Image (tube, rainbow over all chains, first blue to last red; front, side, top):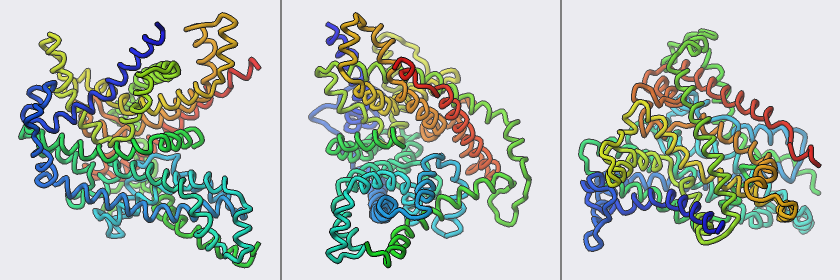
Length: 274
Length: 293
């Protein structure tokens, strides 16, 4: 009896999570003017309005925004992961005078909100002539992901036995060769998890992109979606917007689904120790 | 080990991260403190040192206080609701069953999707013709409120969207906390005749002490950083009824070009977060379970 009640209670939350998401999904294949005219009406199986996706992708510029987001996210990860791994490795395995201080400084960014630095950051990028460019956004994304990435990877490197390093060095590997040939491959599971976790965050990122990409060009997907709500306001045809919502959410949910246990662990580790 | 190459190895491996971090994180942080003491509209020639003037102005700015009040309202009301719901769900998840299994795999969905998507989605749920009102009409309520357009409901509606977005994270925290309590503890309580709500209140709840502390600190951080939800759902309206600190900051900086003032506001926002976090650390300073041991 108690178990049944508990399950009814939980089923209520399952519905609370899924109904809004399913609503977006089924609305995205309805005629645009029916979305708010009859929100609970299901789309007709024989008459899916796939053209909403075409309208979002081409006319509303979501395709371009998708490509921009992909470039920004991947470029950030390609730069972030090696430089964080190098720093995390040295901080974990090569203690020196001041290494604790550097480690503490690296953690500092996790303590303050991005908005604290948003105005100086805006002018820093402007003066470097990279405001409104993907280069500038990638640089900022890398910089503001360093703390978390170094923190998590540090844990991974710490757990690798020192004997491995020593054996490699005795065999004639230099410090850096030991890192690239032996330690880096061993830390791969950690790199994958952090990469996915940080990648999801960057794919979704809005506030920094909003400020650092003020004009309409080169906009990332979240900016594109936010723009679409403004531009479509006067047409009461919401098909393209709902298709756009599916386009921004689907990749993340698919990736999450495949790595959910790992992501879960990373989130928990970051939340409780961080 | 080879000591000769050690120093140059350390320097070369740390250098990229240190340089990027120093230039894009540490330097703007220092500048933020500096900026807050200037009256500045973004043209480099026109920077005037005004000392603490921005902070004095901030103290007298009714909109800023209103915004802090709104942040605190969400923290108190939604925070309490989130903790209660998260603990309840985490507790029910222990029991197992089909619904528990399904919920376990979906409860983080809202947390991993884009906040922009969450904001747009809830904007349409709360739309006068949206999913919610259509549902209410189907149930026979013919004059449902306009939610986001209603001065007395806009903030609460944003709070609902916020709670939907973050709840999964707190379920995760409390589920981990409850899982870390050994089964023997529950069995021993059972033998002593402690069951149901009594067992929860005297055993589980106090044992969740450290998780509660983490959760409340995260709530402070999450709530004080609310930005995109409000900007996209209500723009702080109607009549600033749902304005929060960061949307007001954004308006001052990037609409009114009051960059010095906005930076002072950012420091104010950070100070609120620090003060509340310290207060929480003080409230939760003693582990209640240690007294018993």
